[in-house]
Image (tube, rainbow, N blue to C red; front, side, top):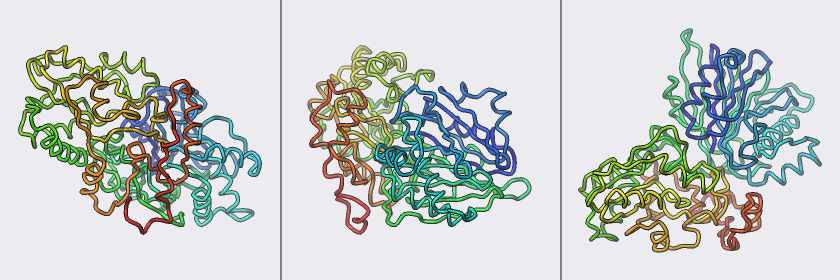
Length: 513
């Protein structure tokens, strides 16, 4: 999960990119970078930390030019604190290319070997984004040969990327002296949207971004999403063209974007994230009515922030009060992003504090967007009891997270997931709740699909173990475990990849399994 931006404007874009990255900061807090171009010359600044800490006035002044790209990094591959892996990445051949990437390539190790042995390209970091850039560079060189660079060659190069790369990727790239390129993997797993506005002189200005909220805040009108497999090319003069570069495509956006990752005021693949979370609350309330009919819930309290819409709708449908019972410290980062269990436990009480009168003597229903590792849930249940709650029930707007995610979310090992080897009752005991309610996967899909019926598929591997790209094996997942250094705590993964090849591009005409 990273945030990317690409802008072509009629005036300097350094401030636009900075402001856009601030809006996308929730998508990555590890590092930030901006690149801009004036003529055929690139200017770049990047580093570890939040956007506000990476860029100073002197850095911004050096980012000259009317088009550029930006990135906020949340590491899922490579080293968490290696400043060399901050993006964008740059190669000087052919033409000069800069790239920023959101997602995760699942065949990056194979591609690295190909880069070294066949393509004669050197990869200098552990980042799959550098691999993606070099694949694009090689394919662009092959598509142009001795010919002059043109739009058709660029689209051929992206088609080559689709043939070689597996996994999830939404990317923006700058081609020196030519224009801005944006493309999305054939499954559309990671989001990418296009916006436009008219400059004071009437010239068209373009913005591509991970979420529509960046368009809203910068004054651009949302046009549409970049389609799965599509490439968009925006010239330095503001010209626009697009082409479908993949042979076969399936629209299967990541379900976790709607559950947790995206901001509620974003629209992704034609779906309002806020409305999707309201719908999740509707389905969850209906399930609670027939699974816990005698719970005697007195109050519904959300775990801030992303669970608020679901909790609000649950309270409405259950006919019980909705209350804010936790106050959040805005200066503590997301516990989901923090790298270690001990850091997450320590941060929960720094991050949240209870309003005691909302708990004392009440049967409380706590609503969270999801339960991943369970660390936060266990601490929060304890805090609710300490605040005087008579009974504490927990509801998750998402199903149990049982499997590793390999498409750009930090859920790489089953040993870290509280539900990987526990049933619902076991998770309930582990977090210390009086009752636990999970969303059914079918209901989650129905909730999101109700807002865009044209979407027939979703990437839900962390819930069901079905990896939509069809290339994930138990051996691959074991390799991820080894890379993370979790061998001592790892579990048997032979049942993890539940026939990931069940759904691939050759099954586009079949119904959802």
